[in-house]
Image 1 (cartoon, rainbow, N blue to C red):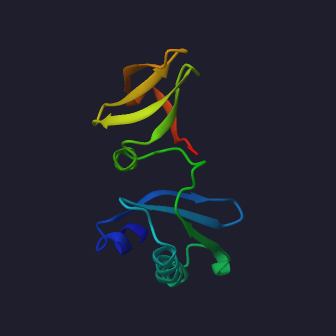
Image 2 (cartoon, rainbow, N blue to C red):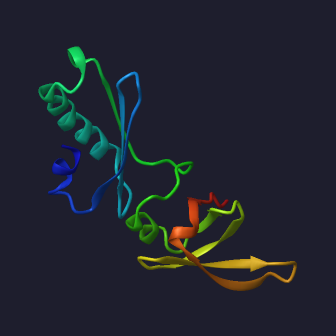
Length: 142
């Protein structure tokens, strides 16, 4: 249902759906240029009656939240990585180690970040395979 509503909106995309045991449905939408609050509200208003009509939950006992992923949410989709090229990211690898740097490039298999190493602040380009990444988060820079 959600993807059908987004079919005519090429700038925005579905990132994740989470359903809690309390029938709380959370949808995370993102966009190549961000998602305006009005778009999130509109999407919620279009999706809610579709869920009611589908009768997926007993007595239509559910709640629906539509939001964009916050900065505390990891990047999930390739499209999110592309959107964040040029931003500082923290990458946690499957082995638990972490890398931090500016996201320079993204392919289907890997990302490239530029790390700043040591007191001399030497720049080092690092390729990281996507299948070795546990999660990647965008860093807040002041």
